Image 1 (tube, rainbow, N blue to C red):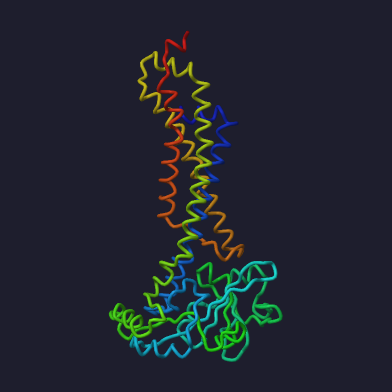
Image 2 (image 1 turned 180 degrees about the vertical axis):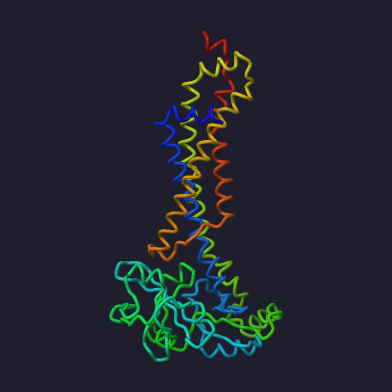
Length: 364
């Protein structure tokens, strides 16, 4: 391995750009895929953390911002599911003056769902206060501490009563209003976007889901932690992110393939000598393959560190509410496996050329 590394370092002008390409490709894959999966994975867990076992939205609608449930249906859902409590929530998106989208949540401050918004500073919402709670990322990015004001819609500014930290990038990039105020602001009087349900007996969850779907076919019920799974919109986003990340990896591997091919071309005499002194074709090819995987390992390590550093910095500074603060371990292994496979394929031209090295013809 030391010989392989020395060989790569002798050609820094080619090796370093190839390593940088791998780092960019692998890092881009990790950032893109982890960001696409964050909303569904982490927000579902936060919804479940309220204690609600079931979530209900309008049937045939994917995103919560498009869902419309009549407020009169909320107590009916509780009756059908035999719930301990039910809580209606409004979810909308608006756009800040700088063009960044801001989620807006309408909640009842007295409902358990308010526990989603863990207070970081300031005070909680109070009834009829016409004030707002801001997520930590949004408050940091916009410079809006408690006591300042935030314009939710043009001409509609609210005093900032407090700042919350949910641990979810989507939530922390938004603001929360009292439910009646949010309904009035977005013209949704008498409607909510989703309903969270705490059952009297959690073991009855499958039965409760079936009862709501049967008695209220215009609604769709599911387990709270699975609320975002199966959304075609989110599946499409995650699929696109994976394809884009894979394309970035493929481009970076082309650089590795080019470096190896040029290295083999320049070392034909050296490889011929190795063959002449007894090295087998497999051993010579193994050396070339080791160079490729050394490039991938070094570039991958740099890419992993860069992606981790970028996501941590983005989360801490509120650069974007859509970026998660960490990379799942499973995704790191998935990306590494894809990188290794891609590099293996990229090594094929150089391997074929090294395998065919003939000492006699090279010496002539």
